[in-house]
Length: 110
Image (cartoon, rainbow, N blue to C red; front, top):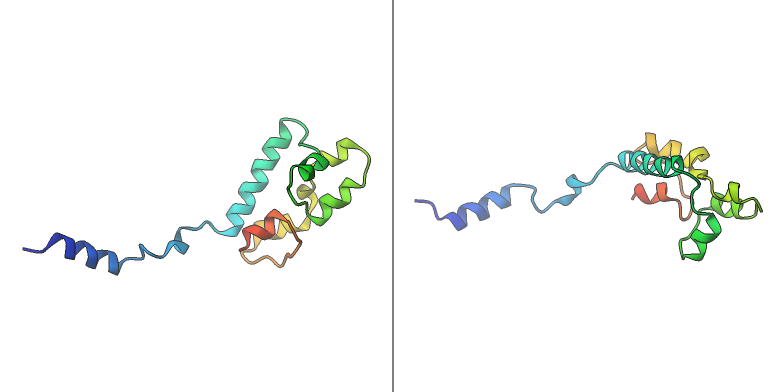
């Protein structure tokens, strides 16, 4: 008769149970999911203005910071990611060549 404890220890050693990297979603999937979620939020109405977002402590990407200079709240409440090339690259490439500071799509590439 096999000792159950030794059997399960041996079984665990032969599997990838300790390697969680296989459980991670590809960055393309994360990027597409993020884009879909933000688009869904924008479909329900304006997004929170970027000035409010920044005041809450969230860092803004370079393009969001540029939009802050526009005095129109409609512009600062839009989703700049919809027109950003970083989104397009991140949704199509696993290691997209984007390096903007504080860009959510760059964070998904890690």
